[in-house]
Length: 417
Ligand code: AMP
Ligand code: GLY
Image (cartoon, rainbow, N blue to C red; front, side, top):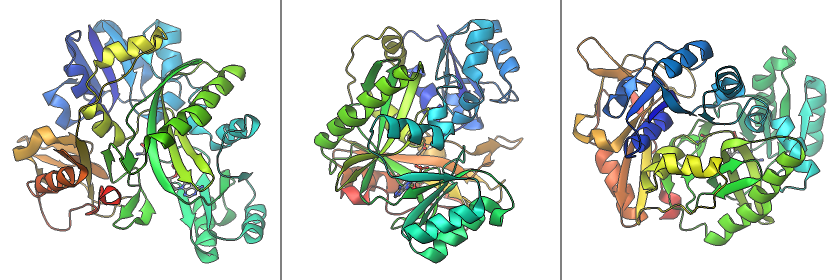
């Protein structure tokens, strides 16, 4: 069968590689893909992930059996509604209504409040002065979030009141725009990411959790990013916490969605935190995590087509994962998540198989150069986390780029050491 993967990042690179392992798959189209995905897919340059009409044209013409949508933007804009509703194309991913689990924090928070799903207390504001007053009353630490998609960058975790007001000014442009924000109670604890295959009242949670590193700099400092590195499994967060997340969060939230008339089909990402009062929800996403997908799909041994079809048929399944540990270090453009320059040369020829490409393009001679904030995830594997960390950084050392063009964290995986 032919498969189309929508998106152009490292997560989609992992998806096309995973589909390429399947004996059932003949051709894989990456729409629009990126210059680094040619190893596993036919890259359909020039078709935007938001151009649903053009995507449907390619899928119908190329006899695509399944479309897998990687990123949130097309999901939240209704790519599934369009491809399935207008053209009868099979898509793995939630429709626009269900994708609100990611696109609207206010929607998801209200659902969790109604069904008693453990999460941080919150309040929503469109008025700057009211938000100010609430923050003054509540005090710091406190968390401010844009209500809407922000690529992981619309979140301010403020340690003191100065940071809180500066964050509020940044998110609400000093009151100039009435974009809604959510103000949340600050939770403390260890975070983990759990991926779940969902179809209505059916869910299958990954047996292996991952941990992402959201802050830009070492020691969890600096601004929030889309993710600067990840690893799995997360041995220091015991199976009991994964189980607790499945029983107290995944089960209740899938039932709550059904109760509310939602019919979710696709991957649901749970960002969870182990707090003193148990596991709580930090966020849901309507798709695989990036870079968690690169790590988890490399570790997963099952055929992804089987897993998708199991989910469609609501068949119980269990996933198998390789023994050992995997670590991925994100090399990013200097300046990310703020402004950065593009067009810097990167050479990773010696370790291509260990890299997942997110922000690279090619010049006319075929040399790779940067085109995005997050550029490439360099992975390492080992019997334990220490060995995987060592392998990952040894691989990072084999990537060639000019000083001050890329940066990366040097402490990926260190919480597990
Ligand atoms: P989000 O986009 O909601 O996942 O937030 C990005 C990151 O901000 C999370 O991974 C956490 O590290 C941090 N964060 C978000 N909400 C909270 C919270 N209520 N308490 C503490 N940290 C948070
Ligand atoms: N790595 C976090 C995310 O994909 O949202």
